[in-house]
Image 1 (tube, rainbow, N blue to C red):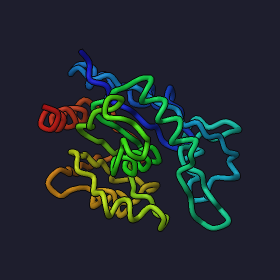
Image 2: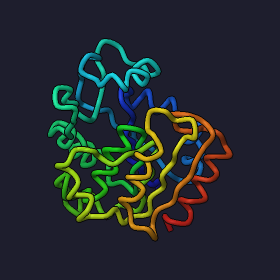
Image 3: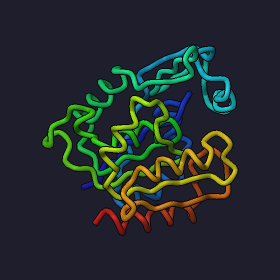
Length: 221
């Protein structure tokens, strides 16, 4: 029986697009009995509604006239929020496709996943039958939510499941301090940090996939 992993893509991607971009890692995980299920963000925005500092992301991804996103930006007040549409969508996705062993997120998807991991079932209003306790969390270019309204959630509920945090040494989108903030939101004895030599993406090399598999074999027993 395969072990399912919930996957959340980055800004301006889709589940199918991210599936194609993670083929190498996905193939290695499948060899070890994992099945990756890729959700697609339910929110569509105009490129003009996306912060200017994320323009490089839009240029690099498969974004057309609409931009798919998990988070809703408020450019006027230089902030953002996790809309109810995302919560509702992920609730239904888990009920329909779960239960899951763990969660993997990239960039904005890793930021959302990290916030949810503070109380996955509570925030998504899932019962223990619908989703038993998750066993691990993998964040590629992840970050801790910045708005003040979310800080107490992290502070009161440190992420306690084993977590893997991956930072690209050439990543100019999710700076190292942002990755560190999410890393520091996890229990010290359950978190692991890895780097790769590239930029803002999930590495697909067999060598890097081997490191992920080795970590999983230690934490998902």
